[in-house]
Amino acid sequence: MSQNIVEKIWHQHRVHHQDGFPDVLGIDFALLHEVTSAQAFDMIEQRNLSIHDPTKFLATIDHSIPTRINRHEIHDKTAKAQIELLRKNCAKHGIPICDLDSNHQGIVHVVGPELGITQPGMTLVCGDSHTATHGAFGALAFGIGTSTLAHVFATGAVLMNQPRVMRVNFKGELPEGTYAKDMIMHLIAEIGIGGATGHVIEYTGAAVHALSMEQRMTLCNMSIECGAIAGLVAPDQTTFNYIKNRLYAPDGEQFSQALVHWQSLCSDDGCHYDQVIELNISKLKPMISWGTNPQQAIQSHQVIPDGSSAALDYVKLNANQKLIGTAIQWAFVGSCTNGRIEDLRIVAEILRNKKIATDVTMYVVPGSEQVMIQAQKEGLDEVVTAAGAEFRMPGCSMCLGMNDDKVPAGERCISTTNRNFIGRQGTGSITHLASPATVAYSALAGFICTQFMTEEAS
Image (cartoon, rainbow, N blue to C red):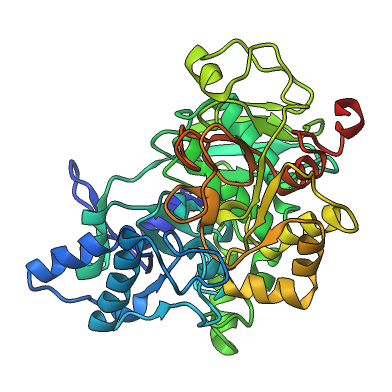
């Protein structure tokens, strides 16, 4: 019987099935960070349980850590306590941790792939909603709650109903100047923030398989923003080339054996999907959000639709208005969505030999210490600094108001992050989501613009 890729992975990991009850699904690996793991550690300790296999876990520090140079000095008492407790719990239970200055500290969804932990066909979980990022490798990866994480600690499994599967087929060729960020924002704008609820999305089409692994991670990262449990791309040679020779990747004969399995992970001809969406992106323009959720976004040539008056009041915009030309005070490049080396290269190339607008503060934050080191080797940090922006230390930074990096109340930021909820980047702040290229062009201009629209906006 033909199966889609999600069904194949599910059945390979199903430990037990009984009609009328959730399946017991085996979990291959779990990633941890300082914000959502503490209560799960408490739960197993209260029950006098141990970690079933500490080698199946890896922790990193990302959400609460400052990204300024002297980041070892943590002023926020809550953030400091979270980080110290993660260190204590990992030491107590024998779980490896990517701590500061380990050369591998960084955002959990950047660190996992770059270490070669994330591999095709895996089940991978984390107490973080953007765990779908790892689906770029053909893994079934999803965020879980604290109590579920405690189950994974103790048993290496979760109780879960088999999800429905949605195929999203991107037709056409991605136009120059648009990126995976524009593709996923376009999808969310089309189907809405609940359009994929209860589904795992398989992204297909020539445009998807033409993407680099880093772009595929961006695509899968925001699957949760249209309600999906997860999103994934079937692995191919691009996937295999990325994984090979990484620290946790299989080596030698083991890699050859793994490759045989990985190559089988594709949806069969004639397999069933619960829903199919097709989007033609051949004329797609850069996407920019205008409201207070990721569904509220338009292409750069479009005007804001008649929509939520509350959202428009919050962002201080009007229906039938273009976003192009809207003044900004902040620009942010980073996060698990767009904090990888390819993102920084795009931004540096746009900023090279130019200066950002005098009334704009711009942060460029690498997603990990490895990204930072590579950027420094290529001189990208010097390009960013010469343009008048700040090249900072690794962390989640301005993605969310959980550390020192916040947008002041009433000020507007164009950002490569994944959410534009009210106050997401700081109480009273206004966020516009966009690709790294759009953020860089806007920082130079001092207002929202893209390479297609710079002359028109000026």
